[in-house]
Length: 206
Length: 150
Image (cartoon, rainbow over all chains, first blue to last red; front, side):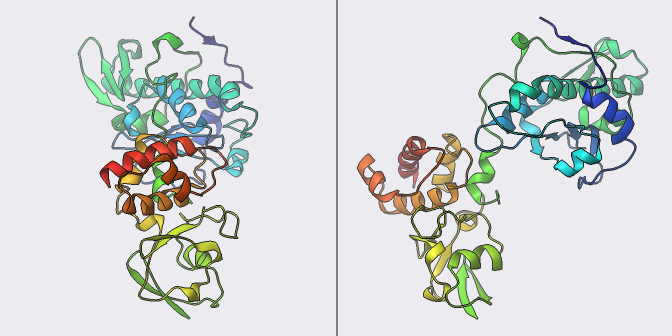
């Protein structure tokens, strides 16, 4: 099945907030120079590394990695360059609850948020593609994205996410999003090494 | 004032003599990888090495540590997370929440330094750290893996 989402104001948090808020004022993430927040869920750095925002607490249950996989799947990014960061509840409040519910309980982190985090990843992907298409002056429909690289089919030109992220952040979020059929997933829905493990082995985790 | 050597670096710290070593590490030196668990040297979350011996730092007065003894914390176990125990932990995805794991790793590192072929009984005898997530089976497997390389 292809889930065509009806993007109402209430359930599509990214669309409204990205245009209305996130581009309107800069919120207190310590973004390094050159980093581009494509939308609330996805930051792309010039070196093509990706920061995915996680709005649930990682307490050993693995949802940090699972949620990142869901966003990364729709984003069509290079999983090996994914890191994560937590917005704070204060930032969520300042941005009109753009990240939705933070409560982490009852095995609900993924069950309750998988759809909108995937939409967040998909919206960012479409905005990155739109930015590349605009740069090439071609229709976005002729472009596709995979592994953090956007390709213009007819000409074979390519550009990486990091190269168009700044322009992508200025794109209007798509009005309608088609989520991938889970049977075509390559990142989500399978066990991968957890992103939080390394810091727990070195004392970096406070 | 106490002088202690932590991860090879001498520090003069302004602490009462009965301050537990753990709080000197965490509060004075900012080494927050070592965790506070029970406070009575039972759970092992606060385990560090003193001259290579696994030692629970939450109930050890800083004055009991001599300046010439080397305290090693999880931050100083290896420069890059490359200690055999850390590598085995990563390969077997041992941690869940991670709170006890710095202590687990330090206890395991002391064990594999002494015993290159630990049996289940050896591990059970030496590893008395407590893990609320229940990572014990993976801890055991990772220690055996690390011991082969250590």
